[in-house]
Amino acid sequence: NAGVTQTPKFRILKIGQSMTLQCAQDMNHNYMYWYRQDPGMGLKLIYYSVGAGITDKGEVPNGYNVSRSTTEDFPLRLELAAPSQTSVYFCASSYAGQGASRNTIYFGEGSWLTVV
Amino acid sequence: KNEVEQSPQNLTAQEGEFITINCSYSVGISALHWLQQHPGGGIVSLFMLSSGKKKHGRLIATINIQEKHSSLHITASHPRDSAVYICAVREINTGTASKLTFGTGTRLQVTL
Image (cartoon, rainbow over all chains, first blue to last red; front, side):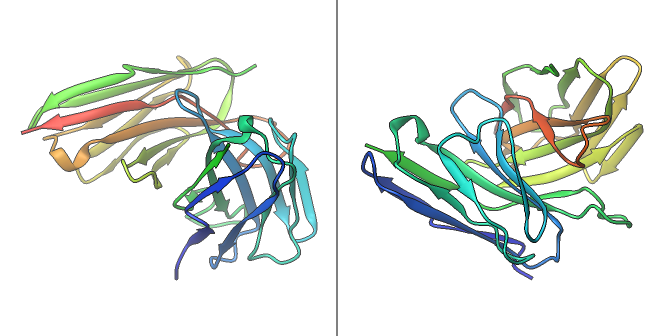
C-alpha cells in the first residue's frame, strides 16, 4: 500500500513549456486534490475531483488543467509554464464514505517545480 | 472569507519542554486538521477533530468550537518533533467534503 505517489519530485521548466505532474493513490479514495504551496503561504487548492470523470476548480486554477479518468489517477497539466507557477505542488486524497478513516487526508511527497 | 491564523509562526524549544501551538479560525467549521510537514517536504495528517480532545502518543489536540480555537500540544518534546505544523479547517456547507482552508504553519525547532 503505497498511499499517494506523485512524480516527478523535482523539475525545471522553461517559460512556455508544458508538463504533467502525475498523481496516483492505491487506497480507493474518491476525493483527490491538487494544492500548491508558496513560501509563507498556506496551501492553496488548484483543482479537485470527487470521483472518476468529475473535476472542479479550486481557488487558483488558472494555468492548470486536470483529468480523472480512473479512481486511482489524477494528473495535473501545466500549459505554457510561467514563473508564477514556480511552487511546490502536493497531490492529496481522502475518502468521503463511512468509517473511521472518513475525511482523513493523505498527501503525496510533493513536487518542486521551478519555471525559468 | 475564512481566515486561519496560527501562532506562533516560529518556535524554538529545548528537548523535554512542553509545547503549545495555537490555531484560530473565523467561520463555522465541521472539522479541523492538524498536519505535520517535515524538512523534506512530506505532509502527514496528525489529527482530525470536530470536538473535544484527541491524544496520540506525546501529541494532544484540543478544539473549542464556540471560541473557534484549537491547540496542538507536544509533551516531552524531542528533536525529531522539529517540523512545520499546519492547521487546516473544513467549513460547514462548502458543498464538497474536505475543501480545506490552511494556516501558514508554525515552524518548530527542538534543540538538545
